[in-house]
Length: 111
Length: 111
Image (cartoon, rainbow over all chains, first blue to last red; front, top):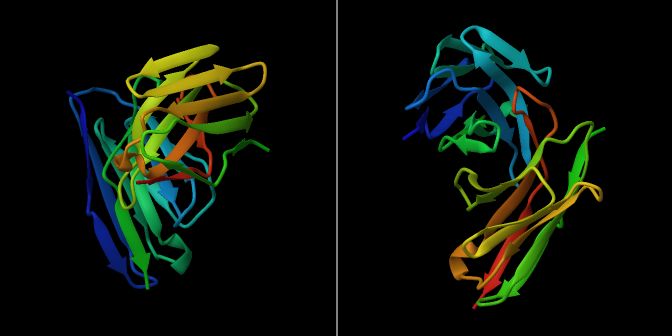
């Protein structure tokens, strides 16, 4: 069966520090992968998606970047965090377009 | 712009039936998904509708009317554990399986 792993679960980082969040998928090959962010009490905003190694599409201009160095690995990064980067970050892969399976999420607080 | 509208909050008692509506305005439509999210957790996939009509999965059913740009999630025999936020999401593009999410409906189930 397919599983998706995301870490860390929580993170507190100072403003101006770098960020690296990792997501890996098991049990499938060439998945479509997605990074979403959820502000407190809000819906999910699509940040990046990837249909294959090295292929990244950005949905919203922001202080973040994404990379896909391996087929089942998706990384979200920032060189210098802003207060507004705080939120719940979710990695997801698509069930053949029928919906998403989400990772457990990373709750990021920028202080 | 593209938007999905859901009620912000719904309250019901244990054993009751509740319907959560979702209306959407998107540039394209390829399917409507529903997700459940408990406080502090990641969203979990509940259902998917691509064609008009009702899809039933246990106590949960989902309905779609493409001509009305409308869908709903029906929860029967409510249980306390159903207290959560529920999100509708529209797949507005083909191929990339990107979804646009509503802002969510917080369901409170009372004893």
